[in-house]
Image (cartoon, rainbow, N blue to C red; front, side):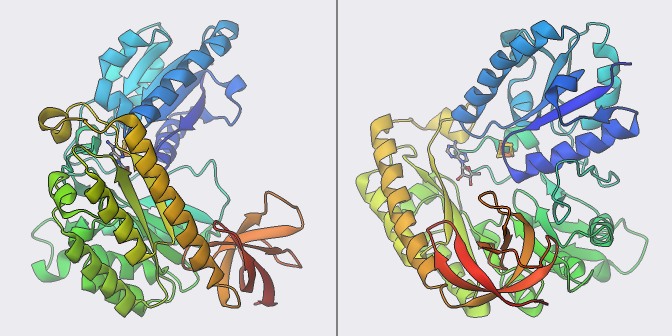
Length: 450
Ligand code: 5AD
Ligand code: SF4
């Protein structure tokens, strides 16, 4: 029976979490997930549509896979995720070696579809849902270190930032039942996992209200701060992280909950996108640079040790040198520990595509991006140098890529620390003193073997 499935994932953490849900749905119906593509009967590619280069990468990958299909002619390729949703049947017409297309809310249909594909059919399922959260599905952690895991807590996004394709590929926002989230965290902890990252496009809009008629309405509402507390209570030995927050609704209440629990990691990813008030307005971000800096002050006030990371876009429509300087200024003020930095890429269907001009020449976008990258590199190195001499509790995640004799882990601030192995093992906590650094990594030594 042809039932071996290989899943290849591109894009954000959400997509990786979705691939684990896909793995669970298929395994339950008798399919097997394989880690060697040469054993596969079905190749599923979970795709990203956020920038044009993400899509080009997938197109290139599809061309490469033609060689494999020539040798194993029964192999069927399916496209999942955001690019499937964005392009739908068009993608199947443009890419002749694709047999099926499945959008992010239709994964429950996969077992049935794979059954049909064997007969040579071509199929597409791209309906978006207002309710699907896959709440009852226990993801199959097939590509795992056994220590850290993602838990998806909500799906979709309706912020409609002017540049962003996500509301069109992932549909309306919906939150998952908190009991199932806490249950999943508890189950992971019992299996030996020591860190969970709660995922959503905008976690601060997490809101759950139980069906009426059960109990008092007041006690039934669960917002994101309450959810974080519930997950943190699973065990003090289980670290809790989350991504991503939108600056417009990063609440003091969340910061207070973060301060209350040692096991909630002190790291906040707060995408700024631009430092210019005019650009932020045009991007429909619904905050000003002043508001953003006020939130940064609040983080520093409640959580003095917290690291802050961001996303930024260079060369959005009509961006002037002055706007770009404002972004650099923002980076100097906040002094991020890490940043994901992108060149603006016009996406079809977005507000920008309908109403704005992609008028910044590519070489200007590149130059501005490089200036941001260079500045951020200096800041990250300076920040890391300040870590030298400090001691952190590190959750050990694995063996260092450089040497068998070294381990690596992260501190609460999500910084990677490499150190000599001694008698320690992945999955343990250890106290590590930082002795050296690069702009990306801290190097340390064990001070106390707990
Ligand atoms: N072009 C460039 N970057 C984008 N992002 C989202 N849409 C685009 C786009 N059209 C970036 C944002 C977002 C991150 C996930 O990707 O910075 O926070
Ligand atoms: Fe994730 Fe957005 Fe890419 Fe979809 S388009 S995979 S939501 S980053």
